[in-house]
Image 1: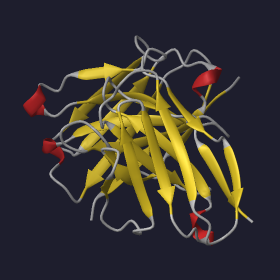
Image 2 (image 1 turned 90 degrees about the vertical axis):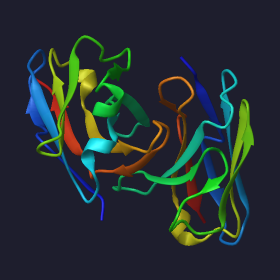
Image 3 (image 1 turned 90 degrees about the horizontal axis):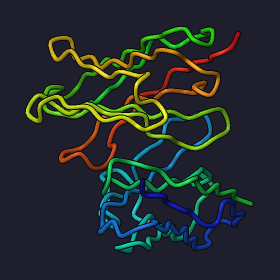
Image 4 (image 1 turned 120 degrees about the horizontal axis):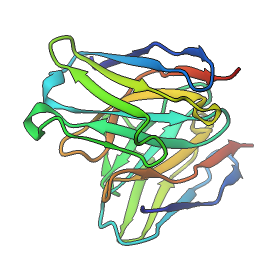
Length: 106
Length: 121
């Protein structure tokens, strides 16, 4: 089983800040890493696929990078509506999720 | 517009069974693998299992935590995916989400609103 570990677990940030959330895989997964956003009381939403590919309808301030075992979700110029929990997910060997990173906007 | 609507959740006693349904619309259901993900109250996301499309033999894979107790199936004539849950445990209490898996079986590109299953005596 591939284990994904996100950091940090929680982050409190101010609007317009740049945020980086990292996801580390327990073994190499190539680019088979995807990011989701879950706002309170909502279903998750796909943000980035294959580590860095953008998704139609997702604001351009969201971007992803990385390959192998280390990946990063970057949010440029954070907005209040970005308050949510973010999850990474791998599809290299079946499926698994990271534990989530909760983003609070000050 | 792609829509996934889960139904069938509710309160059930430990050891009993429950069947969830996921009704899909807005895309060619036959062409896609369908998937179940759950989220215990206040916790993160956990993959449950998925069923491939007919083109891939409708084969199924499960997470170790549910293998042998849960069964996923699909009815392409009705655009419905099912999750049959047997021998339920209190730790199966969660919101269960149905998702579509984008081709070829990588990311979960559309999610339903979820249905809550509570296992309690």
